[in-house]
Length: 382
Ligand code: SF4
Ligand code: SF4
Image (tube, rainbow, N blue to C red; front, top):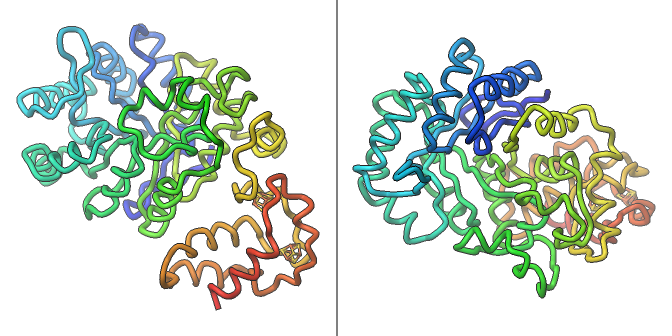
């Protein structure tokens, strides 16, 4: 298992992490079997937004003897009412639900207290200007939580969150299908077939590109949810590209986006987690989502760099994907941020070394104009 740093917190987490959302209805023995398996495989990062009480009780028992080995995310605003999950901002519901979460997970201190599921700007503003955020911050002052995070499916809300100094982590839905979509207030629309049916596939939506760039620049880590697009990417019929991807290919896509530290895979059992962990030993070919997408009946990324690395090797040893990434990070700014310039210029070989031989372009499945990008990168970073 590989580990990545969660931005300025310095905390190292496994790049594949356990999302507990599918553990509802599982017995304690099943939950413990999965958690023990994850731990043996080196997974140390767990998200539990699930408000169903038994899920939390079972997790609490399962991790009791290994609490120190886990980095845990819990959520403010996910409550259980009348036998159902209810997202709420009503503090008389939020507070007891959070206290119950801590009690059932048997925690004295939570690593990340997440502001749960904020997809609308009005909701975000009410949270940030009211009792909700005051309560969350009080928990941090009192040492009940160590850090504050937020979960959202909206790039617009996520961008607003990057402007709040004490939000240190953003849980965001990322996969090649959602990445084509701008901000939609209703998460259900992201997974409905009709949303994609008549859509022109135009590659990465600008709001998302801006979010990834901003998080990278500010060193705010993104952790991924819905990396499989609710499973729709596993089927030729349901995928908006008309072709299925594997779990390993979806994970590779998520983990190669700028600023992404880890992906929470929501699994029902050990077998599904094995499919995800196969990523750690997968070959380059097995991870290769790019070749699948480029040969798909509907190719959405023509002309856009997806940082897949297929263009290597460069005759001048330039890491082309990395240069392209820095170029994408820098090009929307009026003035190139010094941090990005130095990252580019500190590469052993960078755009200044390009001799415009063009041999890389033949290998790019997305027909990216690499020579042109190298010329523009030179101008930008000089
Ligand atoms: S065109 Fe530039 S980046 Fe591409 S292989 Fe030649 S030297 Fe490398
Ligand atoms: S230029 Fe093409 S081959 Fe190279 S990393 Fe970008 S998309 Fe992949």
